[in-house]
Length: 178
Image 1 (tube, rainbow, N blue to C red):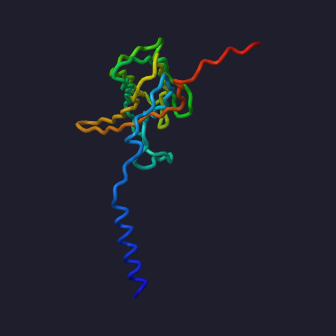
Image 2: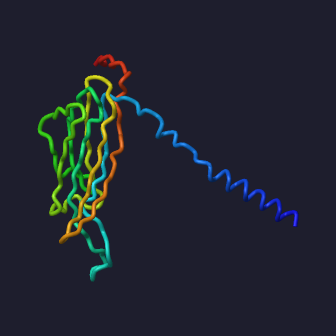
Image 3: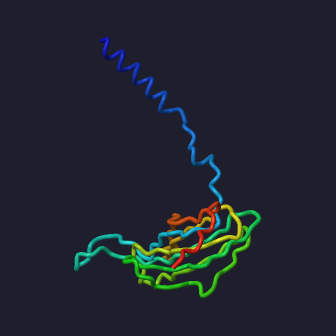
């Protein structure tokens, strides 16, 4: 009898603790400013679905994909220096920029992969390199994948991840002597 009262009390205590909302620390922090980054953005140029076919492989649906690069800074421009598209094996398929592209404050640049382009596969990605003259709010990069048939469609997004950041406080290194 005593054990059941203790376990009931612990159960009430735990359920009360678990119901208290805990604020997300990341949601309240201002992201650091940056003067440049290299960003990996996943692309699903195809997805596997359905059942295995006669050769033991699942069905494949080709998707169109749009990379959206958004300058979120309210006052300053950024420059996109590279937008490269890679397949599932890490081989570069396409280079989208022949020269750097200036992106004014609050502007967006889009880059498109057609749904008939099956070269990327399920593990395709974009590598985007950008820089700014002064520290700015970090841009937002994501892909929107769309599958459309008849009067219906499905869409989903994938967010980019920074794989290299330029330190805005770093001092230039002195040239090395030969």
